[in-house]
Length: 302
Image (tube, rainbow, N blue to C red; front, top):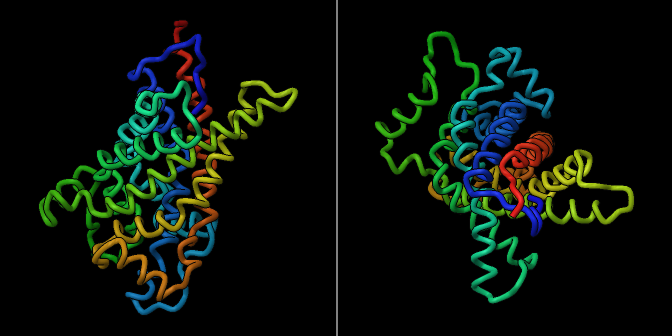
């Protein structure tokens, strides 16, 4: 997220609304790739459980085509309702809290400006806080996305987002909504730090190149850089998170990590890397482009 500069101000409410709106818009545009990513990450465990030796989904585009062919195009938007719930909470809080938390850390260390280290720590903090609040929405989103084509006569586990919230609480208890919280905090805190820090750094580097200005092209390139670094760093944690939320066969985060490593090897942690990058890269581009434009509505001169 770009610094606003010493001559401008924006309220927490303005930043929250801008980032939440931008995150929801990006979610609407990219959730088909996210659905493909979740299916790719979960298919190895499902294939083993069903005694199948051939992978059903192959690659990002192949997965998208398979889902659309077997389940209909709208199936690619499974989980969009809890996805929007998630982005309103997580998307708004992680960026909305970033500047206040960064200012708090700057004041705590009695320095005049935030170092790169403090920016990373601030982003880690806001990512962890935001996803702790939004974890139930993430759980329901993954559960809905994980459901594929069912045999004739077999009912869906959940009829929709609200039914999923209710069913999970009724059958598994309220605490079940925070299943996978550990890897989810780790993933989102780390990815949030990677996105915000890399966006700042890449944008500043681009602006130092003669001929570049603070415009849409700069935001696009910086958003791509943020998405790439976020996927490289967060993909292993993302795989563990999706598998834990997809079902309850793992006893803990560590158990999921060990079983995945033992049964499938280290490359399993980068399963779905291309759809993940396609999704996060495009998501960051769209989100930061929209955010940079919408926040101008709420900025005033100090």
